[in-house]
Length: 238
Ligand SMILES: [Ca+2]
Ligand SMILES: [Ca+2]
Ligand SMILES: [Ca+2]
Image (tube, rainbow, N blue to C red):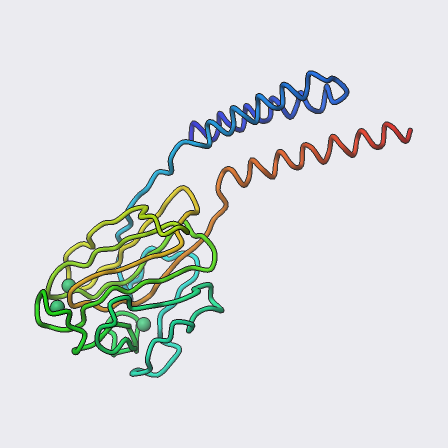
């Protein structure tokens, strides 16, 4: 918060200089320094944080777009392209285990998704419902969450990746029959969200994309330039 407030002060200072000295060649140097300072401050790394909440029927937190997998009949296979219209480019089970489909849910009803009783990788608890479920988003997002049913077997590990498939962050979902978990980040840099586990199903995917501070700053700079340019045009016409 300090950085953002300080950054705004720096930019306002240079925008003021811009308005007052637009015919002064020194402005170019001053503005350049301002942008350089702003860029340096913005280069600080995102603050990452895991998110833990409550699954349906008491879903918390709620944010952005919700996909509850209840739009098709129980038993319907999950197709990679099912939720393109909602902003999910693809949904894939990366290990090719079992039958990746909608099953009776005890989170939001009637469905959650998983690999079913035949989805067993063979190196952990022999209960089925194993897999690595990957969501790829159309636009970069900064917050994601998913309901996880993980009553038995090994743990469920959540991971997020950037658009080059570099790992951004990973954590193990809390133990419990049902939980809700995900990530909330200061920057909009999440392209892929994966859940890898032993005996689990997922429900109530949520994701959202809120403007980064740099986007707001960029808009302010653009508005400043635009206002100054228009003023210059008017003064030339006069
Ligand atoms: Ca559901
Ligand atoms: Ca297993
Ligand atoms: Ca489990």
